[in-house]
Image 1 (cartoon, rainbow, N blue to C red):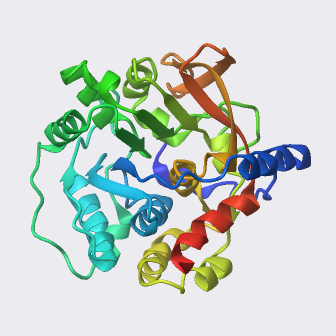
Image 2 (cartoon, rainbow, N blue to C red; image 1 turned 90 degrees about the vertical axis):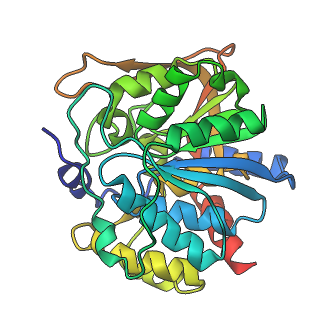
Length: 329
């Protein structure tokens, strides 16, 4: 059985790598497509509390002036604790955001993520959040804003699969589903073809990626792995805003056993507001439920007619400018 600590503690010294030609092309695309000034209605589904990048992403969304954050749902073990972490950041930001704990267990496989280690850094806990209402909240919010909501899923897809199963009309009522998950190229990472969010609940991932959402966008580990920062640079850059200072405090749990912070979820979140940060390719995604030793290996076949697209390159410099820019404003 793979545990998250084992999954995330090895091989963190791989260098930052982006092919020069890909970087040039992505940078050109970012310049060719200026950021839209329209606000986006966003629902965030997150496993905040394990990898620190979820908190890094939430801080960005709370400071992004073009993000209308309609609500947050949490997923995997200790969903209440994860909700507490999300609430702590919202409180510092002065944002009143509905928060609901969601599914703690995968649809079928054994749970591989039962704890939320960063909760040990919480100093001001909120009252317990209402259980068993995350799916109803997602459904009601999407139905209240048909074809307007971007569902941003940066954890295992248990909540999303349950939502789609309970209300099959919901996928068609979304504007877009944006996922941090999967691996869609042979770019080297320590875990071969696997990616954590997918293998934690592969059956949920298969259902969601096969759904009828008008647009599914996935940013995989092969791309997000290319934007990272060590603890010294994190300590330097995360002191410019009270939100980032909270995340910096929580990051001590992460850096106690690791050497890099990879911006998996923040990059995915930033593409909502600056899609030119990445280059995307339309195609068909398959989740292999029989892959060994771990079910959930993803594969990608290009298909211009597909309503699913995956990121194929990233401009790391432009990403960091976008990310820290919202805190400098």
